[in-house]
Image (cartoon, rainbow, N blue to C red; front, side, top):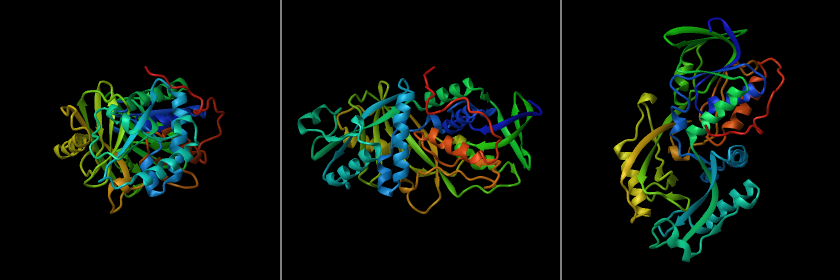
Length: 390
């Protein structure tokens, strides 16, 4: 690859990296993804596995984000029916729940409105005689249970499917390969990577930094120096328990801090998550702490006191959120896409981003980079590309 030229180099083989690869290849651009370990090896295999609009983001008035996510949810359900499954979600309300039934009802009405009031955007109250069928959910003191719809996926499998789609359009994957440096000049970007023990040079017109929690490290190796946005890596832990949740997913409020925790099916196991804590150490060393595991177990045992709570596995991932003094739970989830130059962007970084919105984010990225990239004839439309499991 020494001296090779491509239009777009992407650093990072997570969902956003492969999403950009698919969009770039569909637009007719020669595309190369550089991934150090493996597709979805980082955050993209350690999410809550949800394809959803983000009901709780309505409380922070992120209406455009929710509307876009709901639109993408419906599109992805059509494009990847074997990978993404619609699920029932339940919200139980007790006397100590801070969000009262009327308030939850207002939120669900807004959610349904933004989704367009189709068959699977409606919600209702579960009749009390059916509460005993809700996977052992605690019924003592239970006042109301709302049921609405969202979706669930295998995040790593979805990432691999998107990369296969990109590859079918001509995109290439270099893995394992370490990004070494990037030198920006008037004509493009000189990218250096190491693969198979050898350093390789690739000439690109633009470079997309989709390294997730490692994005700041990538920017530190770009010349001229670029300042990263003020962001925090926030650790989210999950635990997997024995026994299967059969009826759907449960949206639970933690009494101590009013956060939301999900209890969801994961094969023949039960998945519980997530937590949020600022993480300052090396992203490669992230793992679920004893404190996080105990926090999730406490929530699970409160709401499902009769179910087995044996922990079979635990893991943690990192999300990138704006650096503020407030709690991580209340920070904006909007994706930030800073560039080195607004007029002729050569380097674009992806900070944050939701699994659900990866395709829409990739479209936005390509609309920004078109200021720099040459005109090419599109060969596909990502809104119509089917995604299938391996």
